Image (tube, rainbow, N blue to C red; front, top):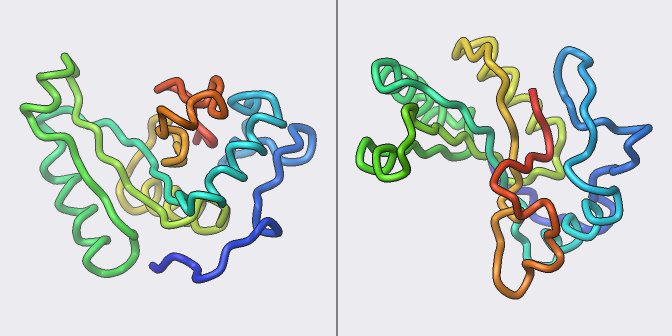
Length: 162
């Protein structure tokens, strides 16, 4: 899995809430994480900064995370997933979380087909049945871009839910 060499304004994802609802599996619908113009502005920010990667967040309890993580790493090594990371026990405990966060990355969230391909593999091969969310990495930018992020800077904001 590689990042496309040239991504342009023409590749910006659609944000019309009537035409492109961001729930990408099983036909379920949710609203955009912010008004369409804010979403479009943040997509342009991603393009300007080339901050195009994003990730699916899968939570796993401590008793199950090792097996799940091993399977995800195998997919990274085989080139089926672009990248992944998992919280450590110390990190999980430091934030008072009961579950580990496993993040499975895609190189370009504008590539809706690849985002969906990874979601399908998480579902069909790795047995993920619970609701998961996809968050573009640009949503975590802060500081100079914070005013452009608006509600997308909230830690719970997601571009897609599945």
